[in-house]
Amino acid sequence: MTLKKQSPFLQAFEVIIFTLLIGSIGYYIDPADPLLAHADFSFMILWLAIVTLFYGLNMGLLMWISFAIMSFISYGDDNIFASILLENLFFVFLFGLFFSNLHDEMDRYKIKNNYLQLRLKELTNAFFTLKISHDKLESIYIIQPASFRFVISEILESSDHNTAAQSADNTLKVLKKFFSVNAAMIFSVKGDMIGQCLASVGEVNKNINHSDKLIEEVLSHQKAMYLKDLEDKAQTSYLYAVPFLDKRNTIVAILIVQDMPFLYYNQDTLLKINVVFNYVWTEYKKRASLKEIMLKDKDVLNLKPEKHIRQDIVDFKLEVIRLSNILKGYNIDSRIYSIYTKSSYVDKEIKDFLYENELFEIVDQYISIKCGNQYVHLILFPFVSSAGIHQKLKDVDTALDTIESQLRVRMLDEGLQTHLSEKSYEGLRKKHISVKNFNNLLTEYACE
Image (cartoon, rainbow, N blue to C red; front, side, top):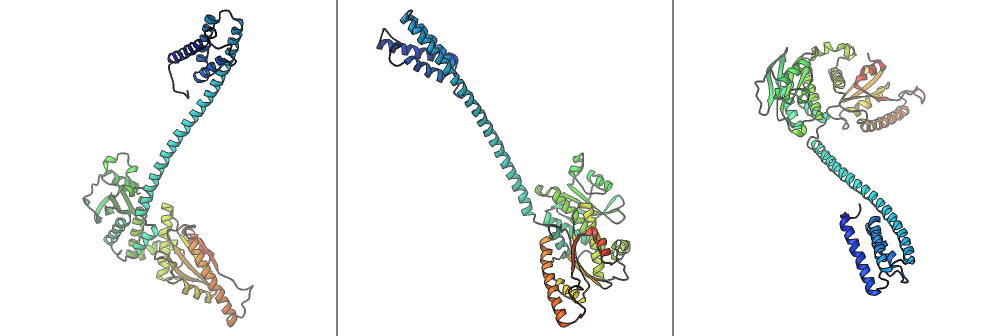
């Protein structure tokens, strides 16, 4: 109940003592009327109200019975007093009903209050747990601010990819710098056997255990795997292993991570390591055997070599192939922004604007090609989604619109194209697409 619990016997004892005290005081005041029943004010109702409202109906009835016993002793067979007792009994039941309703309502509010306090405590604990988790995640991204584009920029700034050892060394430097990979190795792979160690970082044992469960599973399934993928984790000494597959789907190299901080050991970081390793190794394979890759991918490039033999175009198409494979394997999109015009004057102004533009980063690639009487400009933005590229392309569109407007006015004023009119002038066509739709774009511009 809402009041502090007391023993019923103790309550009964208190009520009896209180009743005897009232009778004693009344006898001292008027021995002929100890309960003061004939007084102008009904003191009996007052005492019964106090006891019933404080202790409840049971103790009120006990006090009423005590008064009844005392009345038979003091007043005998007084009929008036009998009617007074019956009236007081009615009020005892009335006070008892009020007491029950009041305390039932108070009990409901107490239960509700206890529930709300419990929920508040639970939500408070959940909030602090969530805050701690958020702080931990935030700390991961604060101490690891590297994005794909930033890491790839670091890779492209280095030209030492001419040998397998150089590419392996560059890979491990990047992984240690951006992902805190403390101990890792890169091995060549021949068939199903681990070959020589191309590079290592940290304190590692280069004598790899060929029966290690993680290594066996990676070579068998030809995909990146980590501890979570193993049923028996005690059979491996490593945390993560990533294979690199050539065009024949044969593993030619494998990255083995032996030690990295716990905060970095999450799927987001492991995915980045996977993509970076394959990207760097593809860069090495491209530089090491460019002619071979061109012959294998001539159909995929969808451009006739006799028409477009510039090295920058070949590199652009190979980069599109690489990013398309990353999109298929890891669902990481890249965008291509195209600009189309039939005006050679507009084409020249666009070239001047786009070459070495500060809006572009080192990872972005730009080429311009001519397909018949059409001029097409293509800008490749690796590892950028449609939403992420919006603001940058908005700035480019604004600049291009200004260039086109100014050049158009100058062309009309100078009479360079007397046939040019408002209706005959064909403006710039601009769009951005995913790398997976690159061949469709070339078909649209008749560049196949």
